[in-house]
Length: 293
Ligand SMILES: C[S@@+](CC[C@H](N)C(=O)[O-])C[C@H]1O[C@@H](n2cnc3c(N)ncnc32)[C@H](O)[C@@H]1O
Image 1 (cartoon, rainbow, N blue to C red):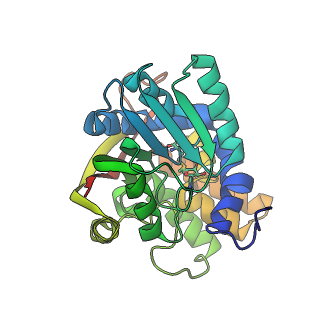
Image 2 (image 1 turned 45 degrees about the vertical axis):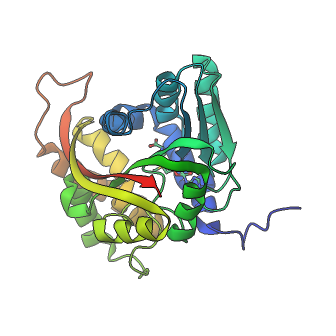
Image 3 (image 1 turned 60 degrees about the horizontal axis):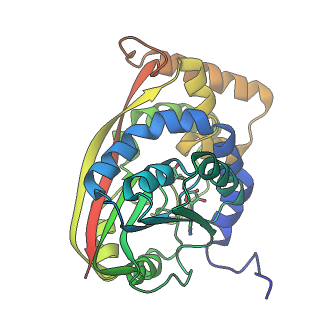
């Protein structure tokens, strides 16, 4: 039966990740991967995937974390990466094929509702892929059901904008020039939806998880030079979303880009500079761990 694109759960996020944000991520994949690598280190250190384990990765995107998970579980284990974005999955597929990571498989599906095999996985993990559910409790109940009893959950979500100056600085500039975004209910699906730890705790406790830990973890992201960071801020994060919503003309875009470049030029530089990166982005994520009851 054909899926009704308007009424399926998370329809707005399907559209966004297939038509707007997904294609942007694919175009910027190399930069994103370099930037977000420290978040993978953090996740793998806390989730500690072991050889032979079965891992479910939620919102695997372009597959950078999937590859590391595949390496960690080895040929005797397996990784299932699930995502709703066809363009991001296409890049992930190519990367897995290049790496000959046969123990990793990808699935185009909505993690909120997909009927995963019951009690099949040792670990469910996500790097920034769990903040987009219209019904987070239903989604985490579905993920819990896929885990073995006692199975581990480990994910990273962004902390608040005030703890992420690389988002706050360009957003303040965009807000001043473009005005506020259209009102949305608090904690609507989006990158900042899980920035309140108590809200996350409530969702997980209501979804069948115990031993919940939520830690605000500093991560040193390696940024590119100021003009490139400004170009990224026009596309991604809260500033990118506001630009997407308001659609400023070319002149205003150029002004925003100039002001954002000046703002990033005031960020500290990384000793030694490129190729690791040029400017230091001191970011904060919520690192969440739990176990299926
Ligand atoms: C911010 S991106 C992160 C991608 C990847 N984990 C990474 O860190 O590079 C969020 C990802 O979650 C996916 N996503 C959003 N809602 C989803 C859902 N309901 N089920 C599965 N994936 C979803 C998006 O398509 C996107 O690939």
